Structures are given as structure tokens and as C-alpha cells.
Amino acid sequence: MVSGGGKPAVSPSGRARPAAPRKPARPRARPQAAASDPSSSAALPDRKPQATPREIPCPNCGEPMLSGWGTTCGSCRPGLVAPKTLFLARDSKATFGRTESMTLGWLVVVDTPDQRERGALLELEQDRSVLSRGERGPNSQPGLFEFSDIFMSSGHAIVTRPRTGDRRGAFSIRDREGAPTANGTFVNSRRIAPGESVELADGDEIKVGATQMVFRALWLPGSDARTS
Image 1 (cartoon, rainbow, N blue to C red):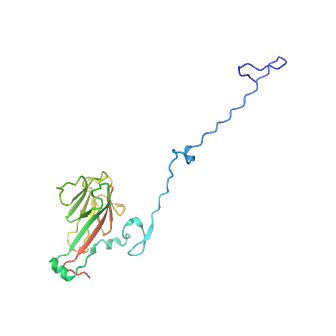
Image 2: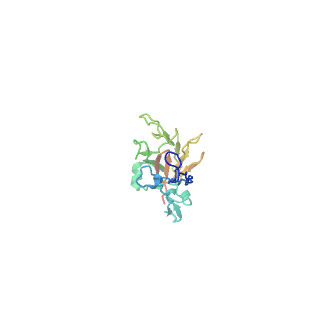
Image 3: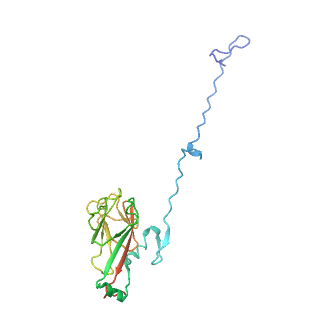
């Protein structure tokens, strides 16, 4: 063996002992990762598994559909784009003095980064209504609804009212004309394709940017309209 000073050890007889071979060093135990210690502040957050879409029966036909599809399944939707009918008594029709049928539509702002517009009721009384990013001022032009939403684009989406008061007429929505918007326009979680126009049914969910709205519609029959 070798002493601490580096000289070989000497036996009682005066002869130097041969140096013993060194044992291989043991590998050092690696410290456990911080993630294994539940009390460590550097532990990675547990990733929750994404919830699978919930399947529900269609309220109209009973066929299975996903909960994010809206108020009805794809098979029933073409027949339900007409707005709800508001029946009026005969004396009420005479009081209003209205002979033509009328289709009314609104957008209910459910959620938006713009605190001023949250919960607002937007009446779609113009032939074309524009949903856009901007700051609504006191002199905003009719049919222009501006939101302080950085995820929306200028002239993001256009809502068009039906040309006639026919009960089968429906409001429609499409993405911005020309260059499509960066974040798109969604109806019932489906993105509208460039150039596509989607007819709206009462209760449809609309998303533009980070703003979410629900479409509502009513059809007012004229004095000579058949409601049966």
C-alpha cells in the first residue's frame, strides 16, 4: 500500500511491500429528479387527460350527436334554420297595422375580452351587420359592431338578414371578404371556409376571435300570413 505521503510502506524486515492494486471507484448515485419529490416547487404539473367529446341524443330526432354540435344534429339542421314563430292574436295584428311578415334576429354576447360588450344584445336590423375589431364610438355607423378584442380582425365577419319576410328565410354569416381572417369565424365549433356562407338557426353558437355569441331569431307573421 501507499501511505498518505506517497512513499511505499515498509515491512518490519525492512523490505518494501509491493503496492496493492487500487479498487475501481464505485459509481456515484445520481440524485433523484425533483419531479419525484411531491413537496418540491420545481415539480412539473400533472397533465390532465383531455376529456373526450360527450355524446348526447339529438333533441329533434334522437340520433346520437356530440354536445358541441349545437342545438341539433347535422341531419336535422337543414330543416331547422327557420326562426321561431311568434304568434299574435288577431286584435294585436290590427293594432300594429302591419300586413307583411318580418324576421328578427339578435346576437347575445356571452363572453368577450371587451368588458363593455359582455352580455350585450346586438339587434341585426340592417341588411348587413359587421362584427369587427375596434373601439365603438358615439358615431358608429349602423350595423357595425366593434369589440376591443385583439384576436378579432377588422371587418371580421358579416351577418346578412333574409331578403324577404318568408318564414323559410334565414340569417346567414360568413368570414371577411377578400383575405380570410387569421383566427377564423366559427359556427357551433366548426370553422367557416373562405367564401362559404352558413345559414343560422335559432340557438347557434358563434365565435369570432375570443368573443362568443348566441344567435336568436323570431318570425312575426303578417296579418294575412298563414301560420298553420
